[in-house]
Image (cartoon, rainbow, N blue to C red; front, side):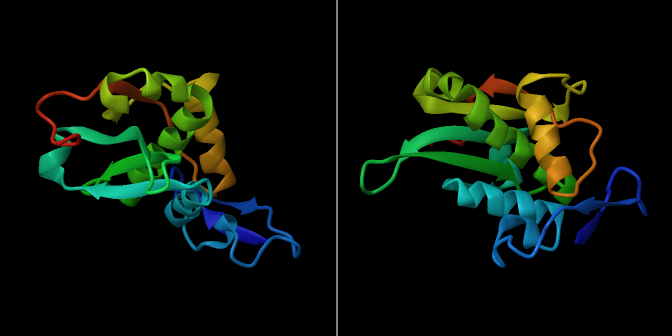
Length: 161
């Protein structure tokens, strides 16, 4: 069994259930919650990019739908480089939850892009934010909230340039 540090309450650990039959290269075998949620995103074929602070224009990142070289639809997640690792993990989990629970919203947005607000919202008791919170707990990260605002891509960002 692997234990991870709960980042909300430093020094508090809780178990991550990983038994012997779990793949040696599985996402939960990564050493930190951020690397675990990132491995999960990659496992679900989401492409993750780092977004320079000057391009993020005050947002935490973005979710977008695009196509690979073979014409297959793929998810794209951008994470602002200047976030600390805990907030990066939370935003990444939220982005994955958006793809899982509300991908139509991305598809119906202008050019298939939505920005993720930088500020946490109140903890969700259901829906996308609640799913993101559960993903983070499963990856060994405690967080007060994994709920963020989804915004249309503003003209001031250079995400879609």
